Amino acid sequence: MIQRIILIEPEAPAKPALGAPCNGCGLCCLHAPCPLGVLVSRRWHGACDALRWDAAQRCYQCGLLVPARARRGPRWWRGMVQALLRRWIAAGQGCDADVVAENIPPARR
Image (cartoon, rainbow, N blue to C red; front, side):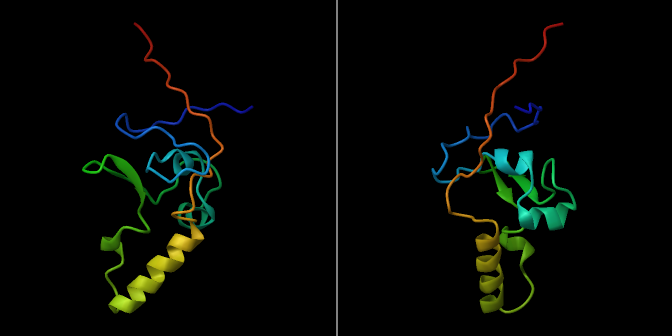
């Protein structure tokens, strides 16, 4: 098993069980980008460049799905683009991150 340290916001929710609804823990996108994230990040490993921390909601969100980024074009077009992006990243399909997360206590000095 490969182990690596992933830095995550302390207020992020705990990872849900496989298949459970996404809660914005961000672990999947911090571990590796989805196929669409690979295009945005230009890499297969490490955190996705599109991932954004929403401090107000205390969760991670895909920056490609944030409505403020899709202000161009008519409303019907923005809706189609958002639907297509949600399908490409499997948004709303449940947690598919087969990653085990452990809290590592800070080192004592």
